[in-house]
Image (cartoon, rainbow, N blue to C red; front, side, top):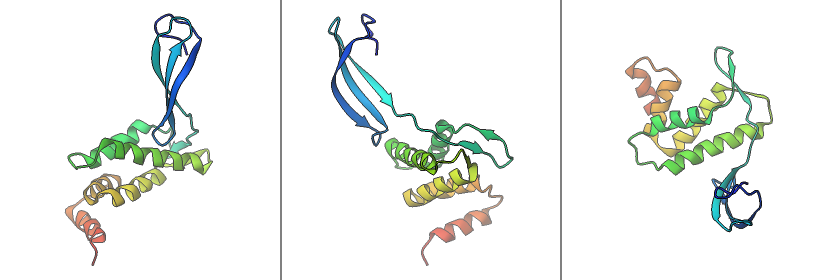
Length: 150
């Protein structure tokens, strides 16, 4: 790491802490040349499979799409942002653990619905309505009925 003050490459680590379930590391460093202190963040790179869409297109996994969909489903609900990040982390880890080169968008969508079903029923129904392309109110009611214990 280059020092932001003097551009020197030599530094020593003063403190290291894992972030986001140990998938990133925060390091506090001190430049060996000028003595200035600065913080670096290092993220573990994980191989995520290519996503195969329903129309057979393939595209790279995009975490921002995943978080955006979850955020929309959870908007105006009392769910803290760190919890949404944790859900994304768990889904990403599960995809990486598959060890395959490709994953279907359906697998990702089903995983999101499983997480949201446990998190909040309204978030789940919102996501399911878009993901499953509900066409009328009856489909909403059927999904709510499945969530409601008899």
